[in-house]
Length: 241
Image (cartoon, rainbow, N blue to C red; front, side, top):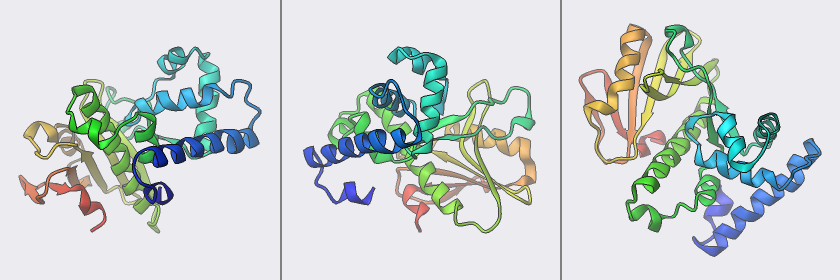
């Protein structure tokens, strides 16, 4: 959020995020529904932040903070209503019986997500494997959110979702136009892209054929190039340029 970015990193920015979450929970959520367990909402939000960019399974989320599943589901809907999280639906469920049908959860704002997970540049620089995994999900949430903002400007209808098979092959974001043409995105936190990183996109290409108009990997590297004449490897900055 621009207001957060104008504050210096550290205590000042952290205090702003804390006040923002408290304000949304205390005012916006309570305006929608009288929540009996108000103290559970920030804890639930923290669990969802830790799962941002992943398939949402309510049962372990509820169990982690001692909520009943039905209550947790209702609270998740409230957090969606006040634009703290959103659910990205599964796409391509007609492409085969072994395609995952559950939605992914994403934080709306990657700054809020980083604050909830205590992800700082200093912590990421230590290259701890669990931290780098969180950073990968953070980067995916950020990139998907930025692309969806641009999709919202389209005059033509665009169906959005993600594609994943039960065996774990995945494409982070799929955009389908009303003429059936598809643009697919995979987001990688690394500075290099290997052939294995294209596995999900290649599977989607095999299933869609000419319907796949563009396949794109966004990564943290500096160079833009074409891979095997069918996929673009692009720096994240290309989202804006």
